[in-house]
Figure 1 (cartoon, one colour):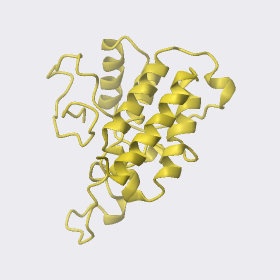
Figure 2 (cartoon, rainbow, N blue to C red):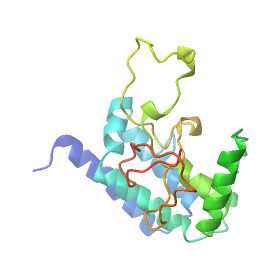
Figure 3 (tube, helix red, strand yellow):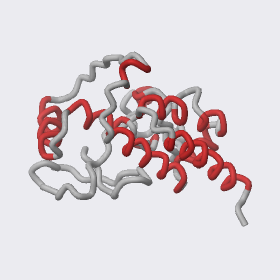
Length: 188
């Protein structure tokens, strides 16, 4: 017998699968399902409920539906929703790493970065600027994840697909990844 939350998880997945069957472009799917006004946010309005859902098998299935839609290479994405540009300052070594990873995966840096931004990460993986760099802050850090509908500033670059072989020269530091959807390896 399913619990009340599991039933709700299944209902949200069914909404996503119904929309997926209509073959929308991935941007429309993201907006309607995972966006700020999407069905996931409506079903799970509190941070704790949303975080719990993001760790479910149903959420994992929704993430995989997004990937499948992105593989269709729809040209109507820009027609349905305007695009925005962000500038991210990162060290030269990280830029070179991303460029190499995109090349290895035979994709563009833009597609690679969007894929990484779509992944949910644990809040403990985001540096807290409010502590002034001090690791001795007495404020507790929640061990929960951020939402894909949340601002992209709450994202970590996620690992590449498991089919990409681990190459020490490409991955100097290995740490645990809190993402429930990917293998336990981190890029940075």
